[in-house]
Image (tube, rainbow, N blue to C red; front, side):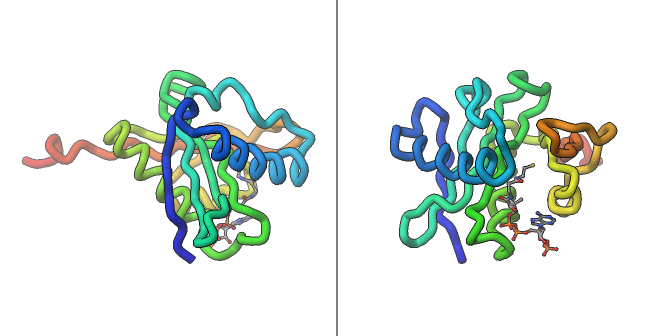
Length: 158
Ligand SMILES: CC(C)(COP(=O)(O)OP(=O)(O)OC[C@H]1O[C@@H](n2cnc3c(N)ncnc32)[C@H](O)[C@@H]1OP(=O)(O)O)[C@@H](O)C(=O)NCCC(=O)NCCS
């Protein structure tokens, strides 16, 4: 399945898109995995990538928090696909879209994720490498992962 992607700043989401994103995140991070305080101040300092299916239903989303807001690097978080849609490649497609948006906004910069530890292979397959030791956040094992900065091509050219 191919999703149609949009990427908006928090202030530009509109109330319907904001509702749909928070409803999907609530379903997963609060009801499936929580209790967890899902919406937070970082939402206001983020780009929000939204993936809609052919019926215009939101089935995938993530946020890209500005560099300097939580981490020195831009960071991707709240990565989620609708439970009934998993295992079809949409999570990977969502991350590819998020990374493309990072590359456009901050060319060549490293990107960080605070990954749930059991998803190391998922993020590893997208170029992220673990940095630091696993830790517990809201009783779920996490690990910091970094996708290294792309070397500047101009500098590599002899
Ligand atoms: C993580 C998540 C976004 C993946 O979405 P998805 O649509 O199932 O992902 P894909 O179908 O693109 O799978 C990509 C790869 O990751 C693997 N993967 C996906 N979810 C996984 C999981 N929970 N545990 C281990 N591996 C997983 C898949 O097996 C697949 O591997 P493959 O390419 O070798 O077949 C989805 O499971 C989700 O929303 N989880 C709940 C929210 C969450 O925990 N988010 C991450 C916070 S750090």
